[in-house]
Image 1: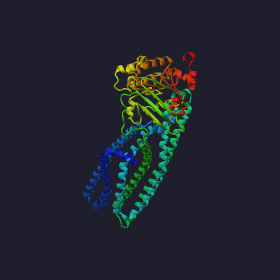
Image 2: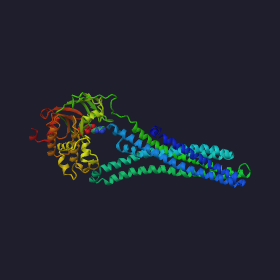
Image 3: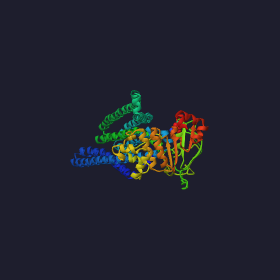
Image 4: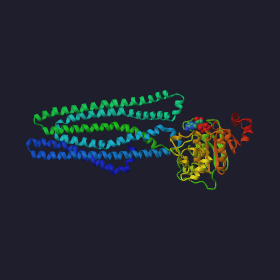
Length: 576
Ligand code: ADP
């Protein structure tokens, strides 16, 4: 929690203002009972109407001032806490944007969403309350005790009993509550996870008629959260009446023993009433502190989760002094004895990979599912860093140049095409912001997307809905290919990007691509032999290792794994 307070720095002036305002408000509150006892002792006892009116007017002014201060304090607190929320959300977003895929794998998307929304709200709430409570409560408690003692020392023992009673009650609840609050945030994560899976998997759920099972899964997560929340609330529900009981008994004790003291002449009515009010103020400030004791642990649980994100070591970052590869060599990709193991995995996903891809050449990677093709490809744009060996682009280790420099050379088409909300043209321009209409059109044409885009109601201006759900899988793939093409990079990486295309479109696309990418380095991951058989170099992967490298004819003659893949897909005539 304390670590997050540094983000309040831009708000130091409003914070100073709110502290001052709360201070004045407390002073006003503390002054009122003294004025009241003066009215009783000096005014009523002496029958001095003038004094009563004058002091009464002062009381009205003090009370009004107190109210104004309270309003101002609320306004300033809201301003500060909402501002802090904004800063935290933006910090989290920026940090998460710099995460490598490792860190995403570690925390998980649903939890990242809860952390940047729900957890931030918890912090906002506590900051909002804390000025009034954390600053106001100690002032009122200390001031109240001093003034109460001035009024009547003889009744002090009542407060001396009430305070420890209240305090122990509060500590008990806070200690019991903390683990529950931690659990609640975890359970909110869980609800998010189930909900996300349900929303994104709705078609599969319907098709397999798993609706009821999913409902049950959601109900379970929901019930789990509710039960823990009820446990917490039950505890607090018991806390309030217990505290009220202590306060009421304190009132009774003060009245009972106070009137006796008034009777024997050791005190007077005015002082007793003031004492009663101070006692209430003191206990009330403890009550407020108790609310803080409840809110702070909850916010602490959230703060820990936010800090975990903000302080996460980023596996992949730019070097301290990034270098730029020599400009004459553009498009070279070289793997030197590269192995990579996923976080927590026992076996490397790829190992001992050595090959070079050159400009003007197409290098294809083929192998069964899980053989490490996508993993290998993801090492080039540094989605992950090699565990051993090195990946070089244009003769330089990818870890020695900045990520921006590296990625500016690469056009990546992922296995699962991703589109963003916006128009078709905006999605293609994602590859190059300032691309002209002609460039966008040409990229779409090469990607074999022109025909269907022009068939859409508004052509390139047609909207793409969230997740690209209003275009087919094959159309999505073609648009994401166009997005890479418009960038005109030195290196194209296609991660099984033709899988959703029919054979005819696939063939047309490849022949158009060949012209467009004639001077570039192309690396294609493919499942279909037909897609990759005319590549300059084919790399055959099996269980993360290279088991063959060469042209189609060479491999067909000399690589058993390749022959097997070919035999399973092509007829005799096609092979020849
Ligand atoms: P391919 O693209 O050939 O189908 P991948 O490169 O996707 O294969 O996967 C290679 C191996 O790495 C598989 O065994 C897979 O289970 C594992 N793997 C892939 N992604 C991850 C990940 N994010 N975390 C842990 N293991 C992974």
